Image (cartoon, helix red, strand yellow):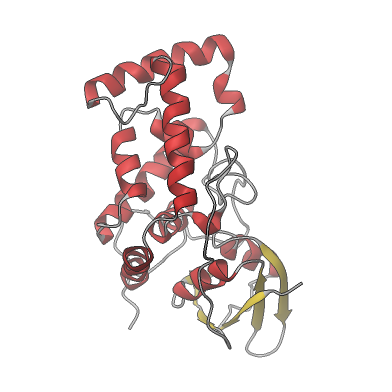
Length: 263
């Protein structure tokens, strides 16, 4: 099977294969990791899809275990073409906006420079938001709206006051039918919350700024804190559904704090 690889250098001596997997799994499905315990330590991360490798290259200059990573590739990786709408209630990391992915990194506690955030915004602006992601989000919007507001209703179509009322209704339905137990994905919870309008706007537009990403990171972190779980990448499920932390992994930093710019 063809894989799409990136080279990672300037690794910290304490970095393990598990640390690398936890870090790069936000980009997409990892097929294999070749860790070379040389001096200095290096690695090659193989992804299933080229878009995941492209996202990984965006993270050049990111921090793992206190070391500023150098991420390069011997080839050029492109986003997949001819994406089909999602058929189910799962969205892969590869089909999320890059700005959303870096927000997940910050919420997890990793340190990324503002230059990386700007890189993510630029990539979203150039590529646009994938049709698969839009189809997924719109489907969620309608599904949650139907449960909370009634048949054929959407959360995003309501004004903020109605969204707040819908949230209370959703909680009541939740208690009766246990929806949260079966719909634990971050996006589901976010869209049904009082600030669901902001979340939807963030993930479905490309006119973002660095501060918007920091704000989204805070929302993700607060959402996970409220639900009692730690933010995590969607591999194989959506962010926040698994992973309680990494030994030697992300720093315990404020996801809304400005990062040091990488030159």
